[in-house]
Length: 412
Image 1: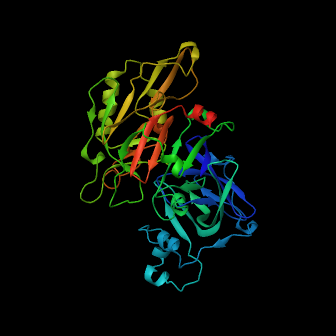
Image 2: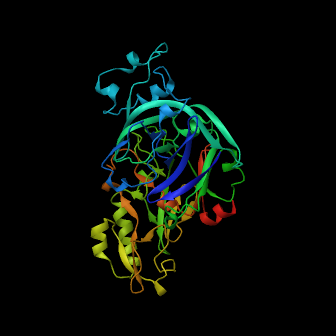
Image 3: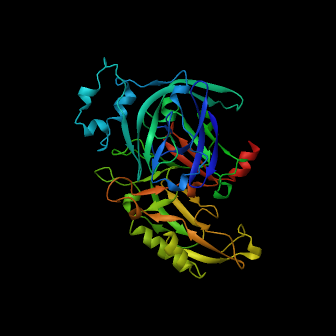
C-alpha cells in the first residue's frame, strides 16, 4: 500500500477512499491511536472548540446514505468489544452501568452502541461503521478493495476537527485490519514550509516494501509497554547539544517502571516533542548556555515556547544557515539521530531587517500531560521532518535516517 501524505499546519493528512461510489475524506495520520474515524453525517458534523478550523477545506464529511455498501457494525463483533472495553469514563456503556458481559454476546445482532473515544485534549463520539476502503498498491495506478473495513462514523467532536487514520498496534487500527502488523510501514514527513502545498506529497508505504533493504538506517528496539501495548515505544539514553557532553536522561525515558509507566512514544499525532521535568528544563539551560543570540522574550510570552532568539538572517533569506547548535537524540542500541536544521528551532514569522525570530519547538510534558503515569516523553512529528522513519514490526524495531523528503517525493 502506497498513499501520498500531505503536510498541513500541524500534522500530516492521508486521503481515505470510502464507500460505493467512493467518497474521499482527508484525515490525519496518527501512530499514537488505533481508531480510524471520519467526520460523518448526512446533515452536519459538529466540532466544539474548533474555531481555528471553521474555514478548513479538509473538513469534508462522509455520508453513509450515499454509499450502497455502508452498514453499522454489530454488537457481537470483536471491534465493538474493543471500542467498549476501554476504561474511558465517558463511554456510553460505562455511563449507563452496562457491563461488557451483558452487552456483548455472540448471538447479539443489534448494532454496536455509540462510543466515545478520548485523545490527549479531545474527544469524539459516534458509531462503528463498515464499508469498502480502497487503497493504492505499490503501483499508484492499481487499487485494492478492503471490504468490511471498520471505522468510526463521528458526528460530534471536541477539539478534533479532522478525522484520523489510526496506525497504532491495536486490532482497530488501519494496518491491523489490512493485515500489515506482521510487516510494517514507513514515512518521510515533508517540512513545515510545504504546509498546504497541493503540488507535493511524500509517500506513506505500508507492507514489505517499507521494511526491505533498509539496513542503512539506524535502528532502535521497539519496547513493549505492559500498560499501553498499542503505542510504539522507544528508549532514549541521552541528548547532545552541539559539541557538548551528552546530557543523560532520567531512567523513565529509557524504559518502564514496575507499574508500566515511562518510556518514550513516537507519535505522528503529536506535533512537538515533549520531555519530562526536570530534564526538559536542564536541556533548555544547556541550550541557553550555548546560544549567544539576543532573546526574543515577547515572542516567548506570546507563543508559550521556552526559548526564542533574534537570529541574523542575511538578505532576509529564512533558509540560510545559522549558528544554533544541532541537537542529537541517542536512542537505545547506539541509534543516534541529529535533527535536521529546522527541526528544533523554527522561524516564527517573516524576516525583518535581516533578522528572524526562531523558537525551540519542544515542550514540557507538564504543559499538557501528567508525567507521573503513562509515557514519560513523546517524539513528535515536527522533529521527524526530513527523516525517513521505518516501523519494522517484523523485527520489532524503529529506524531513522535523515533524508530530503521533498526530493525523495519528487524522485518517486
